[in-house]
Length: 227
Image 1 (cartoon, rainbow, N blue to C red):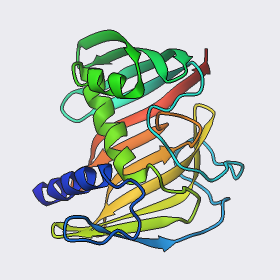
Image 2: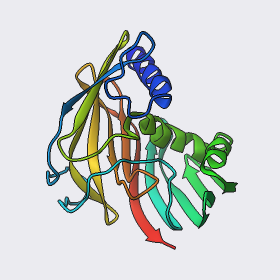
Image 3: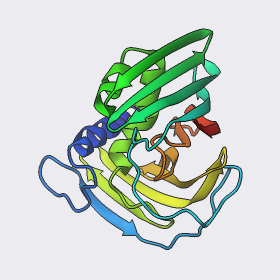
C-alpha cells in the first residue's frame, strides 16, 4: 500500500499544477498518454441504472450553478457507516454558502461556510466532513478536472513510483443523477472508482480500495435536491 500511496501523492501534487496535462513530459512531471476515445452510450455498473443521454464534458469540483442539497451514505474503514449532507444554500456569483452535516462513528459535526470556492476549500480542512471531502473529491479533481469525459475515453501516467491509468467505463445513475463511471488502476490493479457529472460540483460516487481489493472508503449519493 505504501507504493500506491507514494504514486497517488506524486500524481496529485504534480497534476494540481498541470490540470489536463495530457502530453506533458518533463523531468518533474508525469507523462500522460490518451489511451482511447469512444462515443457516449456505454453501460455502467452498480449505480442504479444507466443512460446514454449524458453529454460529454469536463468536471470541476465545487463549481455550483444553483443551490442544491447533496446527501451521501458514507463508509470509512475502521469507523463504519454514516452520512454526509452538503447543502449549497446560496450561489451569488463566485460566492457560495455551504452547510455541512457529518455523522460517522458516533461523531456529529455541523458547519456553515460562506466565501469563494477557494475560501470554502481552505475552511474544509478544519472539520471531519471537510477532510473526507478533500480525500474523496479534491484528490480525484487533480486527476479528472480538465479532461473531456465520455464513455471509452482514457489516459495514463508514468512516474518513478509506477503507472496509473484512467478509463471512463460507462454511464451510471445515482439519486437520479447521470454520471460518467470511471476507474483508476495502479500498476494494473483497481485502486479507485468514481462517477462524475459535468453539471455538478460534487461527484455522485467515489470509492477507494485496499491492495487486497477490500473497500477502504466510499461515498454514495442517495439524494439530490435543487433548493
